[in-house]
Length: 241
Image (cartoon, rainbow, N blue to C red; front, side, top):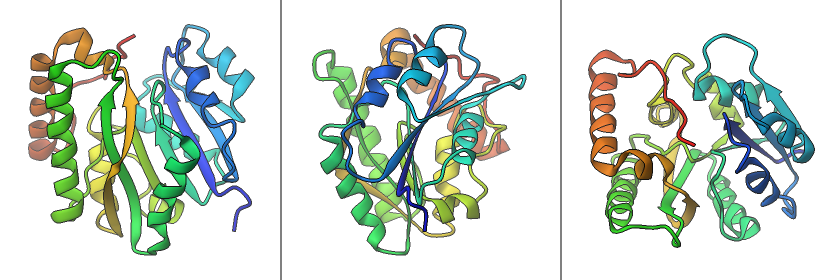
């Protein structure tokens, strides 16, 4: 078994304002771990800052980058028994307790992946955030825990390495829906779990930038396109910064 129990993999692009804080929240973690930043050709100071605080920084050198490529690149550079994929800008309350509880689910050898609730930072949270994330959390919980059909938000996905390798990681051809597709395939080789008592926080940047109505339309169109044609409805999931 690897000496590293947990590999924390952070795919990012143009995240100079968030990458240090995202990495440093794990600095006091007592679980044997490594922090890997997988950058998608950022043009700002993301890579420079990541190299100062992460254990490993992977920089994409191809032509067209997707979140799936970023996550897979990070996984290839990792050594952990478990892989945690989180987005830059995501915060975990009390990371030690949070991750101890998350990893405890994997004492059941049938569990392949875990995801959890999400919420906007309370200081900026709107009523639309509360309604939308409340619905999303309930829907993802129902799909994983009741239907046993994997679904996840890409902001927090904890998986067993063996299961990740069994499904060959993320699809790199999907600019969006790669997270849901990944958990759906995971649920075919093991059990995927949603823990409602674990809550991550983030800035809800896309929803606040373009509005929830437009974002719901984009998501709905993308889910339908993926379901009908097995591909994303967009060519690129442009970062909102």
